[in-house]
Length: 330
Image 1 (spheres, rainbow, N blue to C red):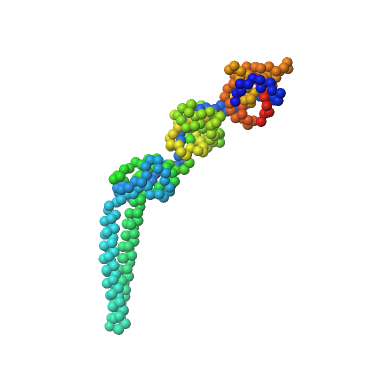
Image 2: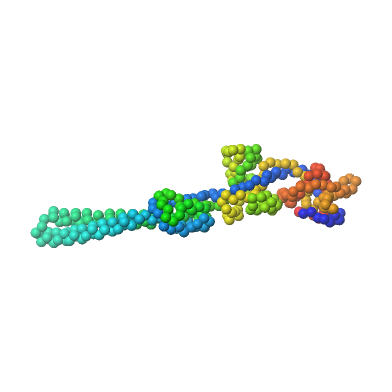
């Protein structure tokens, strides 16, 4: 950004640049906390004891994947009772079928009345329906046993498994919490900035780390977009959500450095090529009516403007000054 070659400031191909005051965002450094749009519980559909757990914290799961198994010992007993009941009813059905066939033969030979045939038919129909009802009851029990499989409600990453093998759970209890969907950053700003932050605004996200020194240079930070500003101030803080890509590998509730515009301030800035460093002092060649003049300046932080890279000049220049910039401006 800065060059140590003072001679290049007098290059023949230098370009004139008119200094103008511009309004730039005043970036405030805060910490954003990674959140998941959805944290879904994987719930048990029946009560019983946990016999199998297939996931741990951090496991990636797919929707519908079996993550645990709950067993109710009473269901096995109920299934045995249902089988025994079906066998007994089928025996009654076989007997009713024999009685119906006998009644049909007797009526055909004229030695039995029609009422006896109707009675046999009714008994056969009742026995048939009883068998069908018992088999339906058995199907319900089998379905209850299958519902002991605890399924992942969505694609995501397991955050918490609050049960262990042998734990007794009730229907509806959560066996795992799954972070589903994209991650976002939640910001908490002082109340004085409540009117400065707007939905749709752009913020800059630094590298992972809890110190601003770990965040890297603001000029190289990733950009995010403010998608929601909550209309309630709690404990003197205003809450905002930021949508940013590339944080899917972060930990939920992890914090990272964020720069957010909270106001605008006037600055004087020049192209970085206009600043030359000689003996530790920064100079800019000022074009005056009496000829070129090298003036010492104090520079601030670089930033990206709509016209290209710029560096802030804190002292040494004023609005309307004409300076020389080596090379051609982009």
